[in-house]
Amino acid sequence: MSVTQQSPRSRALPSGWPVRRTPRWVLLAVALVVAITVALTLTHKPSQAEQASDMRGFLQYVTADIESCAGGVGESLTALRLVESGQDTSTDVSDGISVAQQGAANCEPANSEQIADLESYQVEQSLDSFGLEAAVTDMVTWAAPDAVNVQTDVADVLAAHTAAAKSRAQAQLTRDLAKLNAERAKIDAPINKAIKSLGMHAAPPKLAG
Image 1 (spheres, helix red, strand yellow):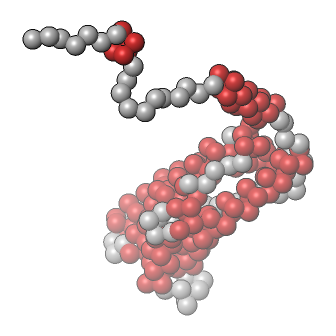
Image 2: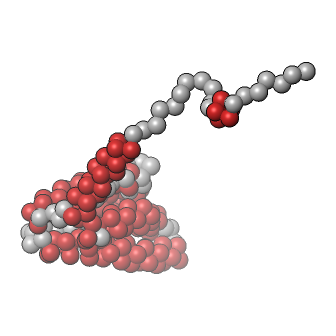
Image 3: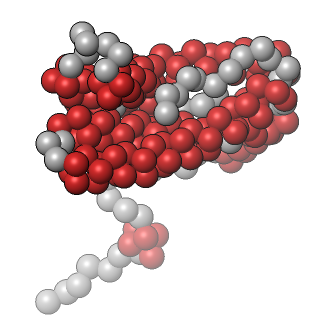
């Protein structure tokens, strides 16, 4: 039986349509465009006016997202003080518990579009040097679990039927309030630093505690 001989060239060529190689000049042109883009990104330094504008946008955004949760914390603590002092007879125990429970729910990302939105917020690149990404992360933590825990504690204090139960709930509230305020300090520090550096008349979001 005879075997058909193939030339080395015919064995080396693949079957089917021929594959065109990208011209070298095209590859060089693409590499040059990428290099120029990277260089421009690295060398562009935003002006203070640009940073201040982005900072104002940052403050407006995060304040809008956190204000419902922060407002609930303030209302819960106010309700607790009014009930315990007896200064406001219109605020009874059941009302105070309801305020605290609703406030806690408003700080949960699963129940609050604003807090969920805050979780995915990206700080403008012009503000990278101020560490505001960490401040946003800490703000989410301030809301959940810290603010959730504080308001749950308020409800527990108001619902306690014995002196011992109330004492335990109050002790837990004191501990959780300390965590809440420590988290707020971590949030305020980089924001205040950015505000001062940019010469702005502004303030961090008001976080109750």
